[in-house]
Image 1 (cartoon, helix red, strand yellow):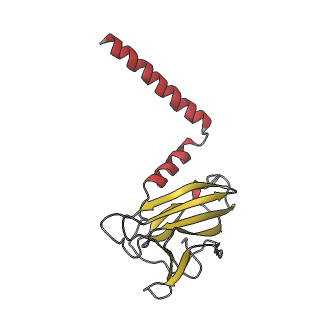
Image 2 (tube, helix red, strand yellow):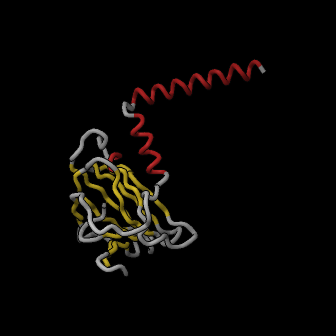
Length: 185
């Protein structure tokens, strides 16, 4: 019994030292931790499900000829949706970072569908959002999801910085709804 307590005390001490080293290495521990949960547990935006009519976020959608994404009209007037072809497709969006969280409208049709949002950092990418469809079938139309703009590199301190994200749609039912060139609202 004494040996077990002795071994667990060393384990506890090692865990405390690891936490202190992590706090020292990451000066913005709260921001990094909250962004980790945003990536792992995507959340609905507060309020009722509805498609917003306008956005005050300066943004531009960048499509290249190599992109495997279709832009088709939605059943809702004024709205369109990006969907992947038979392979995974991606689009890039450039915007000026501002304070707070954004709303966007991904829609998934089943377990083979997923959507991921990465921050583009030169040749590297940083995962900001990921969601996979489930066996229940299609997600709701107008389901608002939160995108935490403060999770981009230096998003907690460098306001109004130019940011480029890549949205990757994978699967036949992966959709990203947009209106008048706006993805984030």
